[in-house]
Amino acid sequence: MRDRLSDYSHKLKVLRQIQSNKAHRYATINGVHAIATVIVSSLLTFMGFSGTDKITSYVNFLFTTTSARVEFVFNLLVFIFFVLVTLHLVFRLQEKQANAERAVTSLTGLINEIADVEHNPHGVEVRIIDIIRHKYNILTETIPANTDHEFLSAKKDLNLKDVRSEGGVVAATDLFDSNKQQAFLEVTIKRSELIMSILNTLRSLDSRLYLAGSLARNCIWDCLHGYKTATPIEDIDVIYLDSLSATKDHDLALEDRLRSMAQNLKWSVKNQSRMHIANGDTAYESLQVALAHFPDTPSAFALRLDAADQLEIIAPYGLDDLFRLVVAPTPPFRRKIEVYRARITAKNWIQRWPRLKVLETSSQQALPDSGIKV
Image (cartoon, rainbow, N blue to C red; front, top):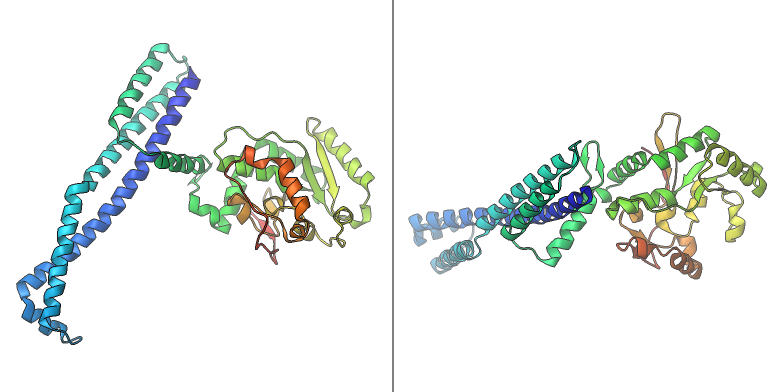
């Protein structure tokens, strides 16, 4: 029963978003139309009362003109005014805006009614479902129709609105602002009980341990795709850099200790001071350099919790590609493009996150200061 209510609620939210987008679009057009009408009608009134000769003399204070030119401008303004009035009568945009706004109000009312029913501790009766279905059918028959493009656009907007912070909705444009990206990442990470548990476990074992970006990356991509269920995880990738303990046995010992602290997780610990050998690179002198040699840009970051519970991030290429749903090779892997292609094929990310855009080239360069604290 509750699944059916949730389904109706989701459909209504999509319809509401469509009508909200329409109302906003019509409001913008009506605003521009009103301003243009006021300006044109005011100029016509002024010129009509003043007459062509006086207008010509006024304009001659600024630059030389003739009565014929002034008369042409007057006639052009009359034509523009006629077009504005005709557009208003033919397209009836104010009426369409009002219809869209009424539809938003009606849809919101039914959404709120469903929410009240869902929170009813006594359960949901079949009779209530039938009433909701009847109201839904009436609404869908009376609200303005929509196109496929409007439907897809509304679903995209809803996907972004599903990710909320305590202060409100994260707008689409915010995802391209570096400060908002960090805030979005922090909110998303702290909402994940699993990731927070992992970060706390790593901090309690060794403050030098970082969670590699793959798990956080999946979490962000799930949110941006509007998924309610998290993508299943394989390994918990943990990285650190210690040139004095650059042996695989040391990594295995850390994995054993982590398993004793969280037995239900599959840990994979890699000391980056020895990973350059596998990649055929010179030794990495820092985690930032090591992350810069990861295969793809949206995965090339790591995070940990500091003593004050603040999230610290190392992101040598920033977070732009992560939030723009772009997968691109890092500069070192542009020279190993076949390895990069094999990785993308094996991961099969497009099937899970179809909005991803996979590239084989990128202009990304490592940032001089990649340490972020949020």
